[in-house]
Amino acid sequence: MGDASGFSFYTGKNLGALGDGGAVTTNDEELANTVKVLGNYGSQKKYENIYKGMNSRLDPLQAAILSVKLNHLDEEIEKRRDVANSYLEKIKNDNLILPTVREWNNHVWHLFVIRTKNRDKLQKYLSDKDIHTLIHYPIPPHKQRAYKEWNNDSYAISEQIHEEVLSLPISGVQSPEDTEKIIKVINEF
Ligand SMILES: *Cc1c(COP(=O)(O)O)cnc(C)c1O
Image (tube, rainbow, N blue to C red; front, side, top):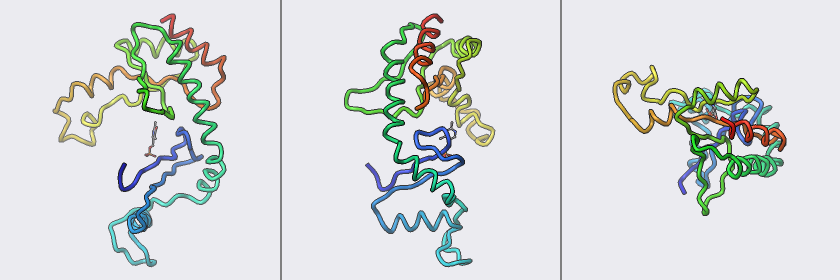
């Protein structure tokens, strides 16, 4: 699909480290080398900088942990698919919009994001029943202080999505009982 792909190994990801991490994959040797050099201060030869790089090397300890976890990634994804399929089949609530999976698609479910006009009310309702949810993400990029130059712009669809999204619990360690409980509570909202 492209020249290179970027992967995050942030702790909550399907393949997560115990700290921060990430990787770039490519079948272009020259590009691979450039990425490596950029993540190492832009330096190939010690103390000589050929690019304005950064310190973005994968910590060896994280790499060791990821190497072990990589063997269990398919299993992790299958368990997440089970949770997601239960949500998709059994959540029946007209106030909610569930994610759509096209028939030609195969999703690994890092997050399970639903949408509703009553997002904050739903989050509080779930929290009162000990169901922890998160909002990914509450503030759109153009409304962040870091992007002052865009703060006065209006992107209606993006702003609406940020007000409506809610990420339901999903992970490889979520039991079918927990999933059933979450579905029942949501259906009663
Ligand atoms: C993936 C993720 C991050 C970190 O992403 P990086 O690309 O590794 O910086 C942070 N927060 C959440 C909720 C994420 O899912």
